[in-house]
Image (cartoon, rainbow over all chains, first blue to last red; front, side):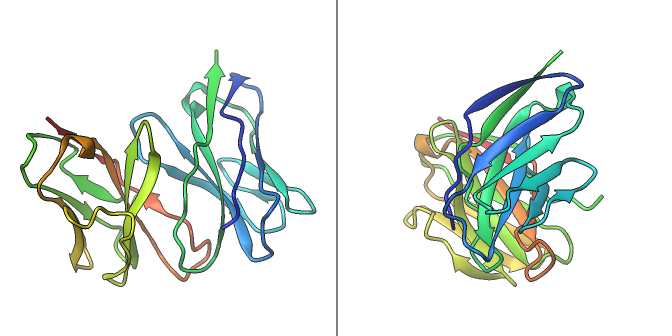
Length: 110
Length: 116
């Protein structure tokens, strides 16, 4: 699975959009981009995933560049409860499990 | 809401004792994962099962760790003998493969293990 690069930490003002970047320049054609988050003392939580097209669900939007070498997770109106570590993971749809990196620690500030 | 459950939530034990952690995956899920999380190493995959068969346990110290799925509703992770370096949070996750978003895993709340 391709490696990802994320900033170690970011701040966001409450109510503003949080844009979390992820670089995955070695992504292969059959690899998806997955985003998970881990709120303190809880298990990781699935947020969203995509292959080529932009995706949106009730939690977030995922924007994948046309060359697929990077993506951005957007939390449109961040709240204090969105403070967490956000993991960007690139993985094929095959049998291999997810491999978590260090992620980005997002702090939403009042 | 269907959830992955784990027991116990907290465990404090002494070095050398046996520790057994249990996980109940979401009904209908065919893949179960065991992860360990520490401050130093982050989230590491220990082992995973599909349809109750072990697919990969290369992340586990084989001499002291063992993972099993006695049935589709129960996964266990056992440490014998436990050591202080095993202190960590152990997460179980389940998923459905194949399926839409095959890497969509649902995590349990974790077992916080402290070995004195």
